[in-house]
Image 1 (cartoon, rainbow, N blue to C red):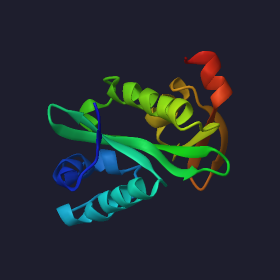
Image 2: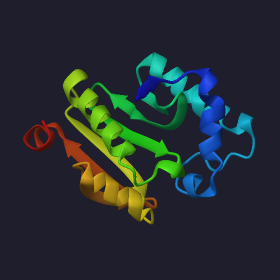
Image 3: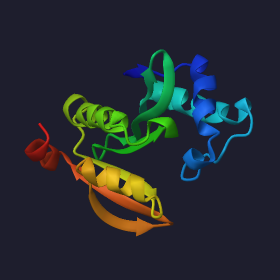
Image 4: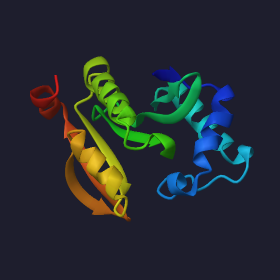
Length: 160
């Protein structure tokens, strides 16, 4: 279930973020202490409030096991970037796909965005495959990231 993130989710985020396999491809690096995750959560909460981000926790049985949402929301170009991360315990279960589908729907149907982008590490094969399965098309590679795009018209033709 998608939930609004709160400060009390800090421990849950730390728990899955300290896994070296999880943090290998995440921009914030691997946290060694609980306080290492605080800037990440503070940024999400601040940008959610300002409208630059629409980010959620993914919660199962009262515990946040990942985050996903839209960042770099640009009202001039009606675009945003998709971001996500999930505890390794839940990789391959379909949980993230279901939540990303919800977020794509929020972006296009609720927010009226025209396109979404997403970048993932070139070497992160699992994530690159996931993005393609979510309807995104490869656009280019830049700074060790593969970039993908999903247009609203493509979404409307395939996914609604």
